[in-house]
Amino acid sequence: MTARPATQAGVARSVRVLLHAAVCDSLRAACVAANATLLCGVLATWAALLCRLSGQREVVLGQPHSMRHEAALARVV
Image (cartoon, rainbow, N blue to C red; front, top):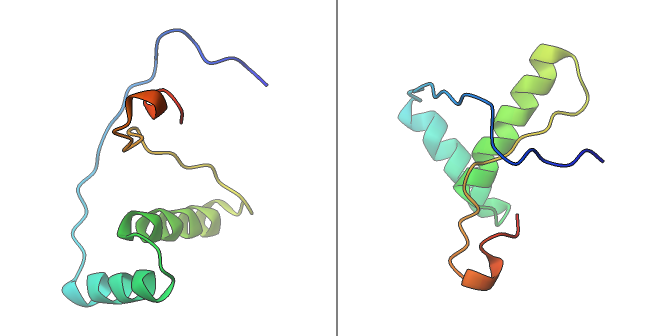
């Protein structure tokens, strides 16, 4: 396994995407039915789309914030 660099060298970008209300409602309902967060549903949907478009069976996704508020867990990702 390769060690992480001491400083980040990548450049982040964002793209704003607007979804129809019906799509959001369907995704929200699917997340509730699966006992998953909306973020999990969005990431799973994005991963499925990337797999389909790339022809790969697996993709790796991440999020830049751990959402951990405990000091002891702050550096655990």
